[in-house]
Length: 200
Image 1 (spheres, rainbow, N blue to C red):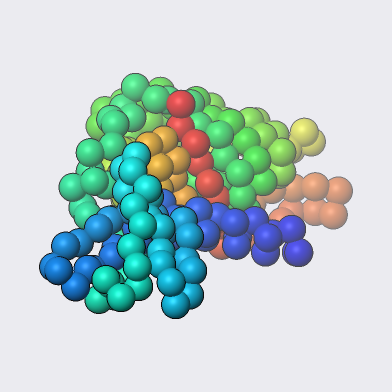
Image 2: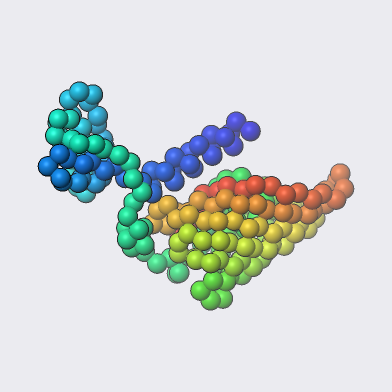
């Protein structure tokens, strides 16, 4: 459980760092956007803006805040329609009951795909179908998977929401339900999921 919490904190900080920026409002009306890399109390701040490191004395600054990235920067990310491989890491993922795995999509249009998946967890291998409201950006995902545990079949279905946090990275969170059989008998479960997905 401790490792799951550490993973959740790391993924959350990754989301925050990729979707927010530091904004410095100067008393002369200028606005500087970037990432504050040094803060010297009662003296100055250094902000990385583009490729430039700028230094401002605190008496020049009206305020500085952390604000969401402008929407136009988030939407200028590259089209991932031709990126059909995904690496997953987390507590479950949008396709299967695994802690880590790899998936290959076979697109059937802008929103749907058949997929093959393999990983470590309950599903060692699996096949399924996924429907995404936005393959390239934030949106809902729904999937159904028929997998194999090594001893028996497992059927699972997931509903999650994905946030694009980098040019090829996503955070997904939602619910997954599954049914499988092992030496203890038939099992069913419903679990929350959170995962980081890298598409290539």
